[in-house]
Structures are given as C-alpha cells and as structure tokens.
Image (cartoon, rainbow, N blue to C red; front, side, top):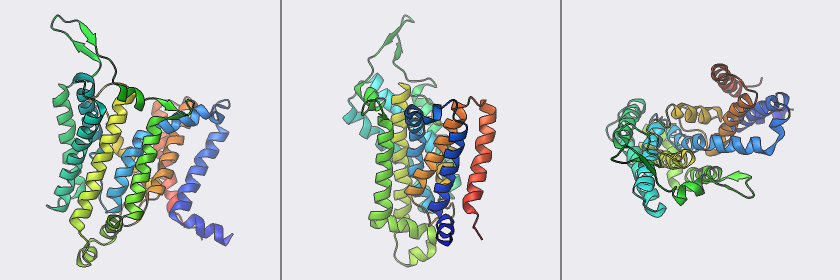
Length: 328
C-alpha cells in the first residue's frame, strides 16, 4: 500500500490515475457498448492527434517556464499556406511540406527571439504572434477558405484535383484501424522524447525552466535553449496545420482558434508544471489520451455542446486538483 501511495504521488502516477478514472466513466456510460468498439478508440486517437501535436511543442516551451499562445494561429497560417501551395499552385509534397515547416519555424523563432533576446514576457510575445499569424493567414487567403473550388472570371467554379499528400495524410492504414495523422502524432511524441531525454539541449531546457539565472551562470546557453523550444513549437504547429488542411481538404484561416488552450490543458493534465523545469512528453501523451477520451465519451453519449463545455472544464479542473493532491 505504501508503494502504491508513493507511486500515485508521482506526476506520472497521478496522470495515469486521471486517465483510468476517465476510462472507468467510459465503461459505465458506454452508449450501448459503443465505447467498447475499436472504431470509437480509433476515431478518438484521430481527433486528438492535431491537439496532441500542438501539445508536443507546448511541452517543450512549458519545460523552459514559458507558454506559447500562438500555436493555434500558426496552425491556421500553415494550413492556408499548405493549401495554397498544394491545391492552388500544384507544388509536390517534397516542396510544399518543407516550405510550410519553414513558415512555422520562422513564427516560432520570432516568438523565441522576442522572449530570449528582448526579454518580453512569453505571454505577451506569443499573444502578439497569435494575432499577427491569424491576420497574416486571413491576408494570404483573402479572408476565405482555400479549397478545391476555384472561381472563374464568368462566375462559375472549377475544381482542382486533390493532391496525393492530402489523401495520404487523411488515410487509414493497417486495415483501416489506424489513421495516418495518429502516426504523425506519435512521431512528434518520439521526436520530443529524443530532444528532452537524449540530447544535451534537453538538459538545457530543464535547467532553464528550473532556475534561469543559475543555468546562465552555469554556462547553459539559455537564449539558444529558448529559441529551440519556441522554434520547435512553431514546427509542430506547422505539422498540425498540414494535417488539419489534409483532413478538411482546405486551408481555413480560422482553423485552430482556441486550440492553444486545449494544448495547454493536455500538457497540464498530464502533470507538466507551468512553473517550468519539470515534466516530460510521456506526461503529455497521458494528458492527450485523457482529454481525447473525455471528449469522445461526451460525444457518444450525445451530451449537448453547452453541457459538454461546462463538463469538460469542470472535469479538467477536478483532474488537475486530483493530480496535485498528495495522499497522506
């Protein structure tokens, strides 16, 4: 019993306990056994994957003691750019994808430079980038969705062929049991894990978030560490934008609105500390599963959207409080 208590007191133990709690709720409110079908779990993983990709980048930033409010807008911007390059200009994926990743990286590095070089508060710097990226997305798209439909001079519409990259990203593999976007999410998890646990810069990120001044005096390149965190957050935002565009078969300048809040919730529910210096991508994965199952359970039980929003907020708060509670 004492060993169990010590395990639950650890962040990963509390995160896993929260996930198990949500799964128990799903087993009880199973919507006529819908919760026990693999299709329900497959769809849950597909739906949470874009949020999870954003949460991977958010985790790197949170570890440094920062926050990135711009990830949703970066997603929308990159979705528009990817749709324009692929749908409208017909560029192949090997050209369009790196270009979109570069756009995301530039947005992230701009936020990182504002935080690291000019010492602007992360909240303010990324809030400014959130507004700028959303405005840029609307300017590039003319305020309209970039879709397959192209209006001709006479007012009629013609439709371009859907690029192969869109079809591949929106496909399912292994007999239709796993969505490709889920594999992309797991790839982002793996990359984040390597950065945080296997690279020297991962230790720099933790040191920066734990005590920035002590890290600087110890020779840690704090500025470069922050640039890495925000730059990778921008790259993950670009990956999420590409996946979003492929799933919707269009680039929507309004895509990703409030996604940053879900990404933060995933990271926090997993047990990552907003104070910085503690956490890990494994905790974020548990948080993504918790949020994903929560949303899916409410969906299959036909809970009204207003009630779902209130219940989601209440359960997120209860889960975080439960994780922070120490068993006496």
